Length: 553
Image (cartoon, rainbow, N blue to C red; front, side, top):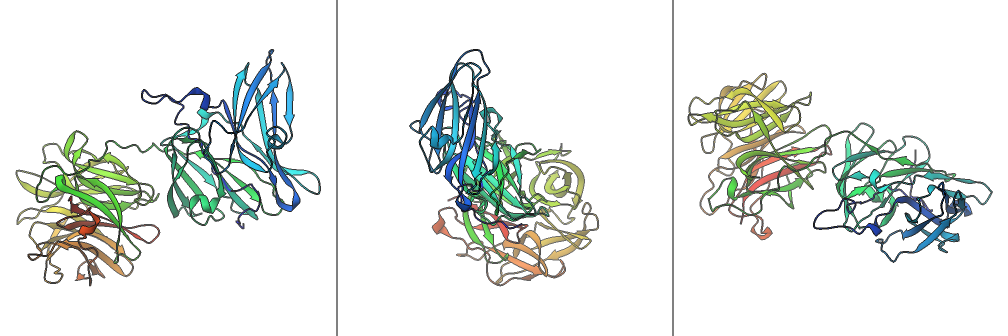
């Protein structure tokens, strides 16, 4: 299959209908006049390939015993729809059938023109409607496709997901377009996957209100769209109709593919993350914030400028087989609760987040679990390590769950006989699980396990960086070995904490990497005092995402 840009009006489109005005709210009631009874997603009267002409044919049938009238409003492509857009009124006698061969040319006196059509009954019953977009060939005959006449109530709504399938064979182009309805912008999260299910691209797309857009598939997604690809769209705000049209590059013949709703509970935040700090402590979740950075190689990181949350500390990052990124952390203000584990979930590689409370069972009678560390097992199980304890003895506990949100305590994973075990960080190397915990400044308790549930102490790991002891925060597998991201335990006077890393070929012997991964940058206005607790995940596209903690200025 060969995907190319179309030279005619019919371009790739996912079709969006932002009907956020359909449900009235106490503070914003959308006038009924802007909500159509039906919508024809795309209409045209324009030159096509090979000297032919695209046209939209509309058939209306008044099946009632009384006359009826409808108002048709044409919204031109590439502009926000307005009440002043071209309108016509069609009147039908009882039982009348009427077919308009070229709607825009013959009734609106518009040609060339492309856009979408709203239908509103103004008298009597709404007629039955049928629409077709066809290309009249210079040699005679037509090719084209039927276009569904849709109800606003049938649209995908906020939080729902739908999928479009790009044909895997044929000399075709895949078309995507958008039509929004309402007074507010419509936003989508788009994920493009290949035939194997691997994520090829993610993006968010915001569309203006009450408008119509046609673009190539590549332009709409912001990436090359290939044969056999799958586009998953999640509605972030508004509501929409979504479709695609594969079009034959030789004949111009096309078909209509309605996006299919896919199962899965809509991700909705349990709470809004707080802004600003609480109190003026030197450190801790009440005065800390989480910020992200990205890297192509896991060594040179660039700040994104995205603040995931204030009053948040001790982050951990993982990515599941679907490409969803999970950012676990301890939140100080979590709705009406304090000092609770939280997971922020992103479907677009960290651009936007949904905030969920982590639900833990089996920890009754223990101090509140904190310092989350997570591994996703091959069968999809989420394994969570936390710091909890009883009678002032802090231990590492292990819990497991299947959805990344709900976990059940499986027992004590590690106890350090010489004192406390804080902030567990796990890494699996081959068949051996390694666990690093804190408790001695500049040193890391090291323990190992064959099952990842019960660990045995193996000694201390000390990896100085420029003479400063390092705290192990988060480990990942990288090409050629393993890398733990660290931060300075007790930097000398006048030097702020920074983020570093250490490399190991086997998970046992560690050597500090040269240079820093990130240093404090006061010019951003987002950081002060220190950078610490780096969490890093190697994403499915080979790049790296980091979340780190800093004191809120």
